[in-house]
Length: 555
Image (cartoon, rainbow, N blue to C red; front, top):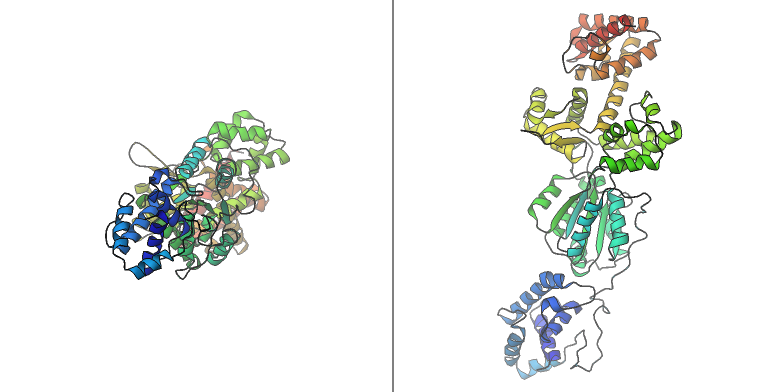
């Protein structure tokens, strides 16, 4: 028997058993196996030996084994086929001889198409229109780049989550990697431009025109990725999550995306799928922990030395203040660049001059970014964020749970919220001698403090304008301003948030005497009608009054 006849027999057996037709890739593997090659010796354009050995060949042997009624492997292939051919009737052998095959063999004079030239094996198409531009130098990410490059090169993992805080450089890093270091076809699917699953599928198919089979779009995409060494990138995955829910809760209209991840995690692929996000879903954490084919790579913030390079780029002054400045913005490249540009343009590059400004967070653009990070949180997450801002010190989870014992039914609710905030990269968790300690990121702390102070000043102004009406005090009723009890003896002993509120009220009142008079009247109103104050309203007004008295006396 010739190899052509063996191959025709394989095709015919699949037809008779009602199996899917053998593709060009399947037939090419059979030919090379019949020629005596091992799986790791097969060189088929566009397919790695690793993918052939792990994915295609095992499925092929199983299919043929079902057709022949016995186990089939690369060593037994010719023997099993010879035995099966001997069992055929003359008419069946004629049918086998008439079968069309899709690859050319040296012992077959017919001019058949070679691999890659048929509809069953679509050509690899080019990447999508230019990948996101990398406009700034990439600092301190050599280790992360090396990890990602290794994951792509070894081609073992099907799905890789690339995550990190917003602005840390995930998009730039992956774009640089795929542009400079990896020569594979890439489609970059930005979910900020096409969020619906149907739109994303059509966008991908505009570059890789795979057919949608009866099994649906997810199965069709997965099949294409199983057969072709390509890279598919989903950027801004966090846009799929719902606002007002714990982190990583998919909006109902985007459930197909979650289903896609589950399918991708189950099967080896010829290429890879990368998911870029600044918010992690619990289901993504589960996939990383439970599925061998899923990897996670966190893009860290810049270390101090790398962050200082950005400050030098912008020619910032006052090197003695650099370390504290970098710590405040957690080595986040985007935040640092936005602020450095504003400081250079508006303050002549002087960090000292910037620090003297009334604003706690500089720049409308940065403030908008921080607002986008904190807006989606739940009510309980907002409460805990503000509470941590007022607390102002590291705290353990049990201590935090004790502080919210009256606000929740079960203490585990606080744990759930804490983990949700960590997944949103709003909360830092660092190791200690016994238990991890929690603390807000410095820039988040400053942003929340500014928003809280502005809200409190607005409430106090409304209460004064309404004839000292305590019912106007919402934030001041919900949160205790002075977390750490201490005697107000001088300016240094006054809580920073109290100082900031008094500064805002002093501006609105016009003088210190009028400020004190307003606070005294509001104090009397809250004492006279304590039932109109929510929880901490009366004590907070008292704290503001005492602090104002102290400041006026020390003038």
